[in-house]
Image: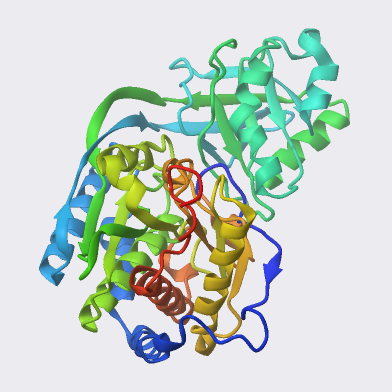
Length: 469
């Protein structure tokens, strides 16, 4: 998942206007078949387990990612999905290398750390310097260059939700560098710890020096700040062999069920096949890849060929570049005008909450009409419990499509513990409940099939290029 919080929105009623017959009343039997098959299915879990246990972490440019791409494309062909292709994508290559962080004064102790993605390395001998600790950018600026110059800046920012707190990861190095800091240690962007550091991308500003940056555990960040507040001299040593290499070729993985009447019209769903280089990338985002892929595969195995093409795409390089999503839009070319919907699962596989819909630039009437259809689709999922449909949704990989008016649908979970595991060694298969994962496959399969098969387009009155029909 990339620089964003779990999507939120104001919930709408599952059903349309009371007493009004559903325009999708003929889909109850197909939805029941899909739900029954998905809740008994083991194939999706097998895919998820293969990603996690047999392949493992899949950072862009790594052998793990290329193994995952080759395996997924081969399996899609073996299972009989149509038009399986792996369009090439040039991706960045960042190598972590050996790394460590130590407290040297007032005592010696190893700090739990992970370098931030894209960080530059330290000199071979490392950086040893006094630490200056702050809780906010405002405190840092108030200290000024005289207090920060030559120091290691430590951000002990409190958790205020991912969207707000992640700014310290993305901007923290450059903001400290402008004041002369030699390096940055960042309290991991998470609400809970157990001395587990969380990695993720940083963004270097063009007008500031590039300095090394690493995440440390909540507990260690709090300790450093306590010592600093006591007026104790705090000295740390940071060593990072991180480096960025030349871009290399990677690929998206695409397979589909070709539509029986309007194959040129497309519903695409997917997750991102890359992950960080720690843990297994289970929630983020092997779960999204396996669930959307299996949703399409289940529709095929049930012999349901929708009117439109139902496509799965496993996007590459979401974590540190977003190049897979942009490359898909370029690969799709003029067919973007004929994308009926784009669905992304990139929030983990905790208990299903529902889906959020956005249609950028759409007139209010078009969005209202689309939300009515989404509510009716949610009603077909009643055996799964309450499934919300909310205004506001999307995803990083489908954002290039959404900017051109394609309806974007983001998958929503309760998100109770997701950010405890996010971008850590702990994002592993055991954190996913099998039944909850099957429910995601079920909901995605119903949603994808109905959107691809129903007589009208989801946003019938609105063309993706903008304007009324």
